[in-house]
Image: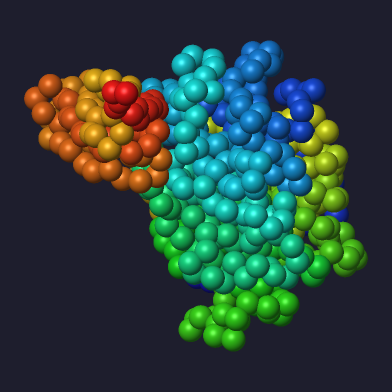
Length: 488
């Protein structure tokens, strides 16, 4: 599909090419400072003036009307920012203004990767609402290459990036291993009740930042290289790269990689997906891109960005230079925008399509432009599916007694509100990650379970999404076993 677009408008692109290294009328407006190691920024889906700045230590700050205040925080006992870890990004649910739900990608003290949900009430989210929406991903050997981007795709699923496990050369053999969740793009449909994600695409080293084009739905991945190349990978909608293999560690960009994975001896039938754009670590001359770690960005779709409109905006951690190119002819149109951001950690996009740059030194900037010629307009090749607005639901859980004789059965009741339209919906009881069975809601929207109590056990109940209501997970309920009193 991309090759067809290239042939159709290559002439138009060449006529608009600008010599690399030319400064353009791009501006930076600081919208907040003094943050502690900020790594990402996004906005309320229904209000682009409410910005959320992610701090690596585990806090999320709300920026609105020129004020900055705490919005959410992961308990310090649950998170570790050692190495490249910490809280790495968040994604607001498309129905955030109704449900208050948002999702977080962070690492714990054992190096495991967590994708979790919190629920906000007004301008804050209690830490007690934090719970995982998928099993944590082990990452035990090295404290780097976590990736950590969360983005909702145009079809409403949550996409997640993971690094290859760290070290050099993918020494842990994860990226090409189709059974490992590391070195991948994962997809989690309808996140809520804990479930296993799909492995969507593979062969990535450290896809720290990726994004979806808000006009076309296309997927753009900035994959951090090792010693040879930094690359931008592309996957057109509506398939979004499902099943694609981007080559690491058999390839690094379009060059041969260290090839330590046994799977490199058996490349996919169609070959590895080559990057749409790549650049070296050494300066190539003529104002060309170079650096050490790509910071993937966004295709600019806000009319206020002037000549940036339609261009893919990106940067590099070591250079701090903001650059861009037209998607239909990257190499011919790549250029510096004449703007530098120290310790460039991330780009962000608000719900109005405005773009932001995040400095690890503590500042967040909004990008602006005074106008000029933009990329040729490309008709959308994919119309995002309208998001279905579902009502929030709550599931409660209680026990007749919190103490039960050892090896006897307890009585646990779960109920769901609102009740309207929920009769017959399945409710599942969980002990940790173990499924203890499913029951179906009666007319009063309640169910009963009788789990055997052999040891101290903590239970949760979950209800799935239906045509009208979102999924929900209950609070934790703990039942302790007791011994029968003995006569002496």
